[in-house]
Amino acid sequence: MGKRRHRILGALAVICAVAAALGTFARTLPGDLQALPYVPVLVSATPWFTILSVLALVMALVSARYLTALVAIACIGAQGWWQHPFFMAGSPLPEAAEAAVAAAKPDTADAYARVMTFNVYKGQADPAAIVEAVRDNRIEVLALQETTDAFVRALEEAGIGGYLPYSNVSSSDGVFGNGLWSATPLGDPRDTDVDSSASFMPGGTVGFSGGSLPVRFVSVHTTAPVPGYWGQWKRSLDELARMRADTGTRYVFMGDFNATDDHTPFRTFLGDRFHDAAKSAGHGFTFTWPTDKPPLPRVAGIDHIVLDQGMTAGQTLVKPIAGSDHAALIATIAVG
Image (cartoon, rainbow, N blue to C red):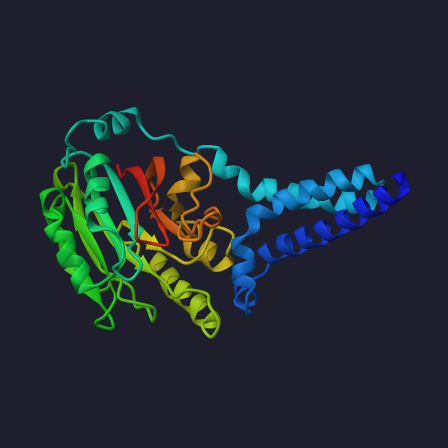
């Protein structure tokens, strides 16, 4: 019985190790290869392969499958190297920022803000719940994706104007759009700041510190990696990456990037200029998708708040809101 149990454990160890190795290897692929069918889906599950690696290691050691154990250890090492920054804060958020956003009413003249991004799932999210989240979290800049005209009207009726009276919403197809809402005027509002084949990505400039620190906010929505659109998915991220060349403007990109930090095209977009707020904050993973498939948990962080050089982030929060397949992502940012 003992030998049979060891054989079963050994076989399971090999299966888990092979699966973990494939998932780990997929993360290392260049962008063109990650755009092959279903590879983006596999890569989005990268952190979860750590669990498979640990299971493979335990079963391999018990069943004396030492080569399998070495493969599992290699996978664990790679995953640890890639994922540990999410649990180790980079530049800490200034204490003044934490104090400022804790006030009962946000100070729109300082260099700090609570910001939020949320995909409203074709206008089906609950507008009242969004306004409640804005109020309770003292949000100063809000980015929404997949809006509709009816949804925007419902959001206005729910009272968004009482907290974020300035907005810029645009749509490339006249059906679904993206938008920005702000507590202060949006300077130079444009239908799209990104020459993207995926969607219009509206932008607007917010003046921090009494207007002396202008920051350009953009609501982002790239193409989803689904059958028939694998190449378009990468193309939409590559188009976004061109924004790194605009060095005359300081940016904050917020939205549904349809990619995680494990996707090569997303990391290419970040380059050595931009950084992901959740990763920089070091508060752990911010899985935002999917929220509409209970009892399955959220498995991927495809919504991001991306900051320019010299900005810091903290106090990240993932907040489910009824009606959408995404959760909202909230963070405190310091732009000075």
